[in-house]
Image (cartoon, rainbow, N blue to C red; front, side, top):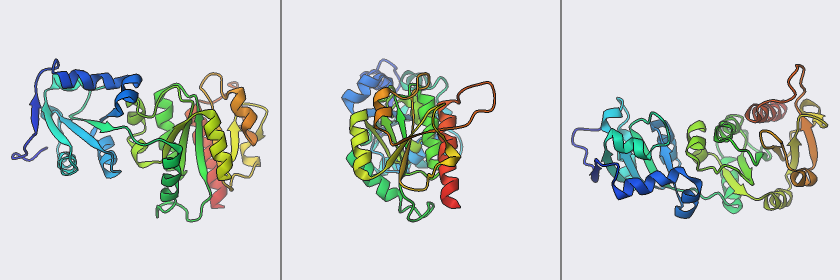
Length: 285
């Protein structure tokens, strides 16, 4: 809970407030792109975002939904220059993407997802003491994935497997989608991410000297029969149709996860997780 003497910068009680109406539009991708802003919901997601130096412009707090021990992020956001706004439950529900929002929602600057910034963040992540020192590039490339939940889940898996970054290629959903933020548990702010076209991405990976291995359900080398210890980018494609022909024409190899049952493919997030952990297994042995 917030301290009894905590001072809000403003209080908004009406869902018809112009600022509230404007922020509610950030649930839509075109508005996020035009404004350069995004919504971050949830205490844990916000805590990770603030720890990762995300620029929060306004923090909406609904006191009736707060839980014990959560007040610290309001003070941290205030110290970092954010406007702290007290809102009612109805106001929070107007802006929130979740069906049952908690007491925290931030309006933040959309992070830099260019390839230039991506390269810098990858190099910084390699210095993380939790990761293997001297580990060559282990990147996850996600081409045209449509479902935000899958993209967010892959972000969590890539972070957990000790990968160095995720590159979204020709994304059908953007990294600032509130469901991506939610399903990634906020790892989008702590983990290196980028968004680019297929042409740009292929050229950038080749210039970096990173081998590109595309995962498909068939016609590839089984993942445990190919060396994944060098600098590699494992790519997965769109949920239903997989990789585009243009992407496959530019990769260095095709890999597959063997199937022993009647289904012929895995959920894309499951497939990405298995491949990343196979790469990590090889690098640890």
